[in-house]
Length: 383
Image (tube, rainbow, N blue to C red; front, side):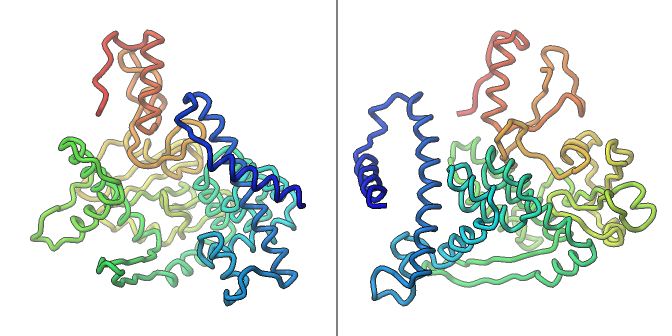
């Protein structure tokens, strides 16, 4: 162990002296991956060492009120984050595969926390964690967790957990947080996202570079302004998309293997789905698990059936869309790419369109150009 401490000090000195400007870019990319793996291993080792220290009653500065406070101080973190890390390494001891992945630097403590929370799905979650970021692991864990709760009970829990709180921070900024059940939360977020996308396009045209979170704040203000105020929503998609198994919809409840859920919002009872049909900004999609049988548009906005089908994502989950490139989980600012380009005779159809983020879409366009599937003159790339 003394040797480990010496190696850590040696590594710290090497990292402090490291200057990436001295390396070519193609060497920095693999180095970044190796350093990231080392960082995950260091986080895990630190949490395991801290857990042992606490178990033995040891801690650093006696001025700290508790061992957790000591760890938060030396880590530059919060006590909540420290407790979460300690809980994760403890639970991982009972999940050999997750423990091995942590000790190999294949997963982060944040990913491991999601995995150990659902030990019955450990293998599936580990497979995703080893090839993806944190969000896909969280999404899958949430899906599996919700699947284990009867829809009626899940909906009751969601309704009971709704909240909205606000306060002023040290700068006098109005801060708030909230939680809404899917039938009200998803349409609200969809409106925010659509308005944020509109504001992003406006900012680009005007040469402004602003973070999406900033534009989302402007979108929130625009959409919650009084009816007489500026910034009325111009949403181009339904606020809520509901997917339901055809037989379950006719029957009034689901059986095993049948689904009734809000896209991006999780499962709901069929009775709630039927009640939501009265909403003026709803799309209902009925399917048999493979084929889409009916796309019913309710209200004033009537986008094309194709757009509705595209926004659902792949069957049978119909959980919305994200970038189709392997390992990319972006859900914002997506563009629809023609797998077989229009210039090559490709159709604008469900089978020939897939969602891609802007960088991957441009990469695909360049590959198509090199393959001779497009014209010779490249389009002007956005600044």
